[in-house]
Length: 85
Image 1 (cartoon, rainbow, N blue to C red):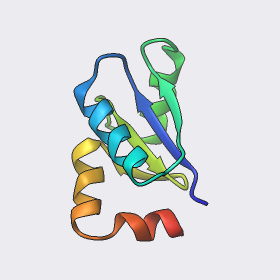
Image 2: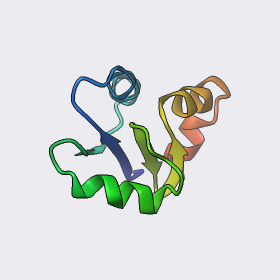
Image 3: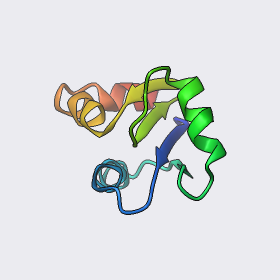
Image 4: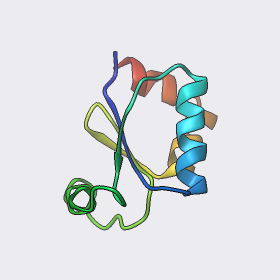
């Protein structure tokens, strides 16, 4: 089973959309709310250099990117492969 991590925030429509896709695919994930836990934003920045926006998504420690990147993986038919690795 893949380890999926999502750095997100409150009221973020892109975060909600990304999490909805993961839930639709029955993928369990760990969510880190960078607004409630500000130290997580620095952690996110270290793991995804240059990334300042949320969500930032990781699958098996591999940086996916944001919501659009997650949906692009799905559209290309690669998301299931990433989740199976």
